[in-house]
Image 1 (cartoon, rainbow, N blue to C red):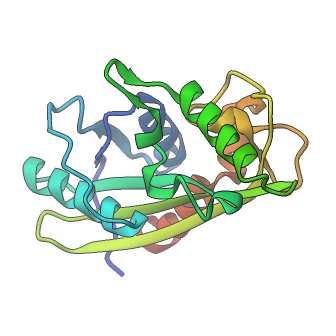
Image 2: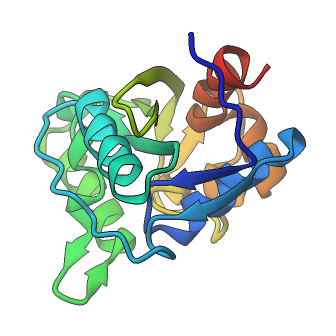
Length: 202
């Protein structure tokens, strides 16, 4: 497995919340992060139907464009009662002509669960795939997940995305009610990050 040997890592995202979360997780290793958005890199089309494929597209596009080692994350919520949806289309469910509206996406998720009369608890899992890509085309892949359930109504205004309707297994609070440091200890992203750190940073 190839090791990361730089001081700055390019994060292939235009999402400020995701950049902050990744930056906090890498800070103990003396690594600073810069986003693809800050460098003015375009967002490539995500044409795969799985997390690994889409993360690879983003990581390699950024690494090639900037000539830097790049980390991409493709993540989403997979709801059992919706046969795994929205899955890789998690962000797409929030798209509007004026940007992403995750409140709308969460409302759609619950409405569709009600429509199919999904049994409770309405189990789900947050999935995260991390791809670390080098400009020469090499990459390393790490996957993580956090199991839990979809709850209603929305609870909490912390976090981002679908956090206010996801209650992780073993907890009474949603991701939307958790402070960042608590969420970062248990999240799907931290699960994948532990594997990334073990493989490429230690």
